[in-house]
Length: 142
Image 1 (cartoon, helix red, strand yellow):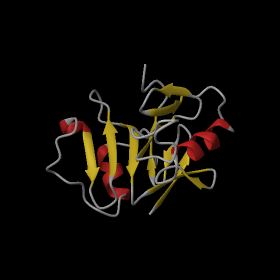
Image 2 (cartoon, one colour):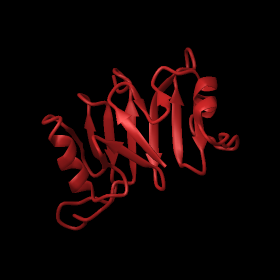
Image 3 (cartoon, one colour):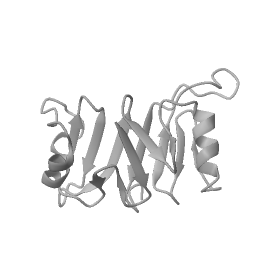
């Protein structure tokens, strides 16, 4: 399944700002009730490997995280499951001020997108793949 990213708006059928009930109504599967990531403030959709994070105050979607087999697609190109350096270079075309998260990935505050590639190392692991992509609301990391 492909989730098309619209910065600071949505990813696939999930819009930032939706309630937990709204998110669950647009997903093709039920969330896994046995996960323990952030407790009641997270839905985990196991078949899609999609995490949806909610604010504690109001239970509104503030971030969406994707892992394989689901593809997070930005401007026609998948960002996860591809070499980190390719995905980073793609994002740099739209945001030349990416924040490097040493040995973890990069974050674009301009686009509201983060790439997670813990195995990336310029010298030892240049072909490491992006393991996860997060799409987040403005102020999520403040």
